[in-house]
Amino acid sequence: MLCQTLKISSSSDRHKQLKAHLEDLEQKVALLGHRMRRYNARVRRYKQNLQFQNDQQRFYRNLMNRDQVSSDKKAANQKQMHEYWSSIWNKPVMHDENAYWIKDEILERSDIEEMAEELIDEKDVKNAIKKLEFSPLPHEEQNKYLGLQQSTTIDHSKVK
Image (cartoon, rainbow, N blue to C red; front, side, top):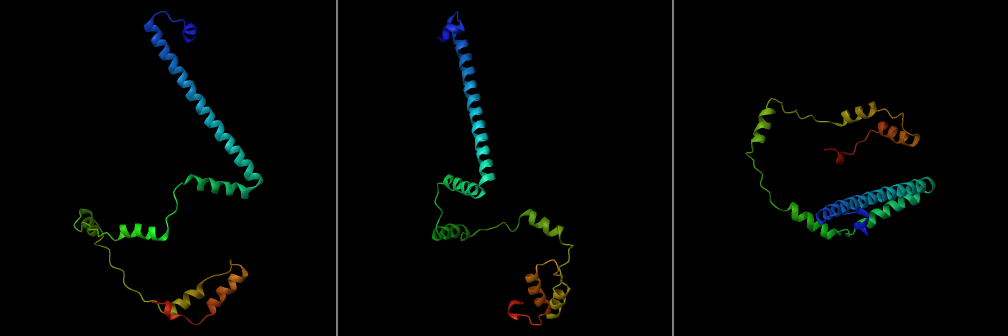
């Protein structure tokens, strides 16, 4: 039937024309497959948009379920996680202390002075708290921070 529609005369021509026709058919199948994928994606988007407009809760639930179905692996338990990370972090690693780039960085930053240590005492903290502005906060939050401003005690266990 195919040979009748192509009107093939010799065997070599028949082979070339069959090959060309086969390539055309393969391209048509690929085109139809691509068209179907685009159509399915469009239908899925349309349904998701409609669901988002009508029932956002179900839309997000379906998104979460789709993500859960796509992952076939089970989550590791705490013991497995601990073993995995311990196997990584407990391996001794030797770094090249004489790497050229370390020396370059030291030379590049040699002119930077070391920052002097500055001690912060209670008086500095109280002054900083007094300078804070709390006006844009809601009433409850404002009261909480105003109480902080008026506070005269500092928990020394939290101050280094």
